[in-house]
Image 1 (cartoon, rainbow, N blue to C red):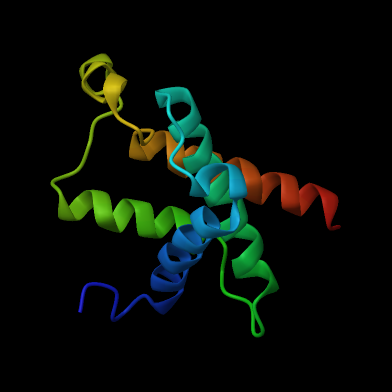
Image 2 (image 1 turned 45 degrees about the horizontal axis):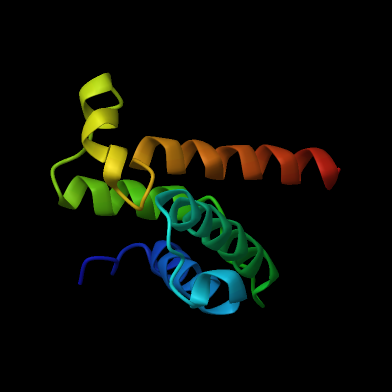
Length: 114
């Protein structure tokens, strides 16, 4: 099993998909690329919250780990200009940007919960 040794990462992927279902504005097929990417960001944010509020909580950093695991399955991605150009028409941000988004959420959470 792909996530057998990483149950928090599996929970993160499930929480991300639940984020799409919970977010009313994203449930009904956003039309533009910008709307689709915004939905991905919001689903990541919802997943982050769901992971923290689970009982017992999951590690919300596992969301970044899950993105990296999935990306490595597909051979990895670059952060260079070519990767950004190729992903220009993608409805998902490139993986390094998504991982950075999770890191910003962690830093914000840590700063506001001390």
